[in-house]
Amino acid sequence: MTDTPAPPAMRVRRFLGSPAGGASVLLLASLLGFVLANSPWAAGYAALITTPLQFSLLGAHGPETVGAWVSDGLMTLFFLVVILEIKKEIVSGHLSSPRRIALPLIGALGGMIVPALTYLLVTYGHPEATRGWAIPVATDAAFTLPVILALGRHVSPGARAWLMALAIFDDVLGIAVIALFYGDALYWPALVGAMTLVVALVGANRAGVRALWPYAMGCVMLWAALLASGLHPTLAGVVTGLCLPATTRAQDGVRATPLDRAAALLAPFVTWVVLPLFGFMNVGVSLAGLHPRMMLGAVPLGIMAGLLVGKPVGVFGATLLSVRLKVTTLPAETPVRMLFGLSLLCGIGFTISLFIANLSFGGAALVSARLGIFAGSVISALAGWLWLRFSPQPPTSRA
Image (cartoon, rainbow, N blue to C red; front, side, top):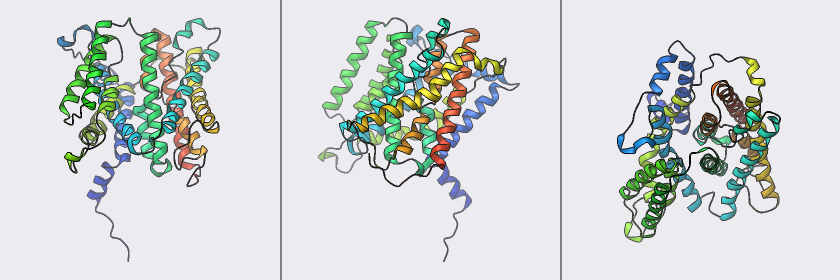
């Protein structure tokens, strides 16, 4: 007796409710943005992204366009949701020991140092290119997550948690690099205010505050303070996610934890609204005026080498070394072959890379830098996906 196939409508609902469904929507939105940026409607697409949108309450530091609000505002929710998932893994999952937390942190450090050195080596003798040394240092969590979700069973749950923790550490370190080497001078009154809000959020956690609205208000206020301080405002999502309680109390009965309630509330919005908008507005890189010979310039070659070679070598090498030295252990069911494929995916560097490129260069150098970021990120995504999709994986791994 065979099972009756599910009706088409039910199959569609299942697909849309699956991780692959969210990844597909992000991919389609990103592809649409890229197509529009290279079509007769490119001017309208650019005008949409740069549509002025300012709030006087935020002063001169606030986002000024629709695109900036998506990248600096809505993406805070993405980082919040990812941190909630990672914190859940830390409390009771695949990152529930100091050695397992150290694993993605060590990988992130290796994945920053080696790409930066690779870029400087490739661009040696071109002093005008030196300022772009940090472009290939960060992994884009927003685009890496859909790729590993689409791979499904080809990536173990432990490996998925490790890669997302690494990407978040990577982005936080990348934001720190921007603040230290590329940002304007820090505005200390706002920074002190941000620190005070962090203390308040930690205090709310310690005091056992279970309602979500105090954390929501704290997140919004912290976002505004970070914006004025000169630091990247999406750090507010990271801090708030870490402060949300992840356990229940006896008097709560069977109620879900504040962390679970926040994740259930925000995850659908992030999956179906925030990420597609981000992909639509950030992958629309115009190829107008670009020539193949531009790929041979010091800047694009350095960026591609950093993403395609420096990233996997740094992440894979640092991670494997820490395991061999018994400082850390690999996640369950994560063989070395899978670790290498995930390290290839770490070369996806859209968001922070484009941001640093805008701070590093202008004119033709900026165009060539964007080309290097786009080519390096796409090739890294394809290489990692193909490796993980078609490479035979043993069921378990022993480090």
